Amino acid sequence: MIVNYAHATFDRRIHGSSPPAPISTATAPFDPGLMPGINLWEVVRVPFDAVVKGYRQLRKALFTASRPSGEYFVVDRTVPELERDLGGFSFAPNWEFSYYTRGEVLNLARVVYERDSAEGTTYRWWQTHLRGWRDDEGRIELHAHWELEPTENGNPHLDGVGYDPDRGMERLESFLEKADIEYESRTIETGSDGH
Image 1 (tube, rainbow, N blue to C red):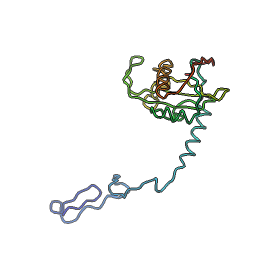
Image 2 (image 1 turned 90 degrees about the horizontal axis):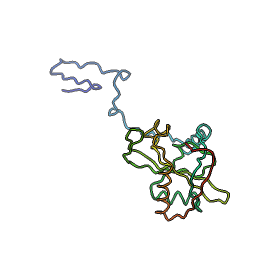
Image 3 (image 1 turned 135 degrees about the vertical axis):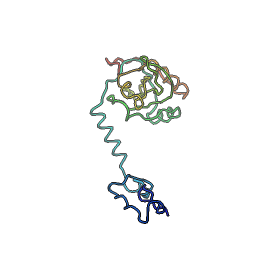
Image 4 (image 1 turned 45 degrees about the vertical axis):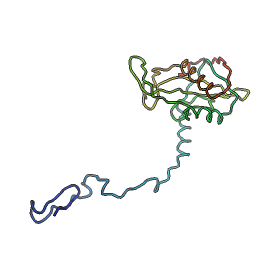
């Protein structure tokens, strides 16, 4: 007869007539197979909307950057329309993973797997990071840059490795054209390179 005592197997025919004492649950190794499955989402309801809002407010207070100078594409669209139209090309909200630039109303990123080198190192995950600000006439001023994707390349991303506003604007322009979004080019001087 074989008896299982918290990973210790005892065979009476070999080791005698009495099995060893079971291992105390306080000292036994954790075995998820011995416990019924618990789905925390059924037990605890995390208020994710409140957590995200709190995180965004903290980010605004602690992690800010200046709006960049340079070329912008100005579009006569609402933020929801831009999110819809560019979302069709895999642009997604990016508020959680970027510095807050005061006054911005749009923050999207399109992440791609692309083997490319910067400063002697080959990286695989990159993004086109797009931000937008509302002008005095209610239109949206769009500025983009190409950079390392931050969750896969934390420190190199923060150090600006591979940061390329020209490439970002070229990619943005191609997506605006694919989405049939009319735009005009405008140069805006803010006194900052934005990085």
